[in-house]
Length: 253
Image (cartoon, rainbow, N blue to C red; front, side, top):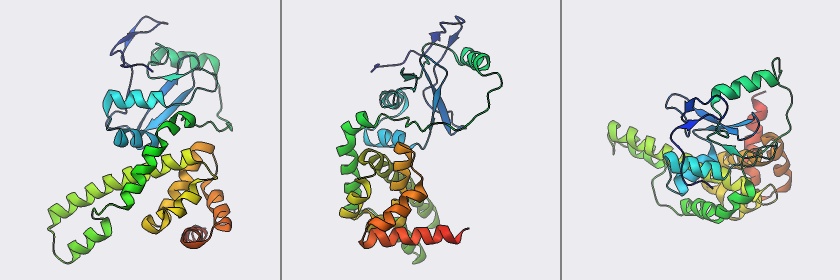
């Protein structure tokens, strides 16, 4: 793993100097990290669950967060690594190579490829799930409690809106933890552990959907199919939550 990024690099192809992109621009929701050998890339969103988890859990941002993201990416299907400096090739040259290789390329069905190195991320799986369990025991005010206080006139509109934003930020990190942990736990364990520790009781059906989303991230499995299968296999509150969600989905068609 590299310890830092060069701020400016000379492209090995055209000799022009360029600065590697290490995070999304403020007005763009994502950025791309290219392979060091071929022209494939992975797209990392600002709200990507793994990126959010790394930033929140490890207290990282900026360059340290970008280093962590790069460290936990899976290898490219070609066998080489994804890197923010794209193998010291500038984006203009990579675009030229793409055009030369695929001048009239039409996107077709692609085999699923998890962009994250699940085996390597398992190094921090325990810390991630510990953070999930800590949230279950937290006495911090939730959104429902805040709304009730506002409706009783116990909090003014200004502080109320600020508190709503803070809760949303906090809960988005919690959901990111759960999606990332679910990907690491895998399809055989994620729902079992969620039921054992009462995640569905605490969060409701939205967390079961988040678990299915995490499995989709890691294994390419359909969220709807995953939940349908789990509804048949589970008992207790978690099964009821899944049934409610599936009925809502069915009612939308």
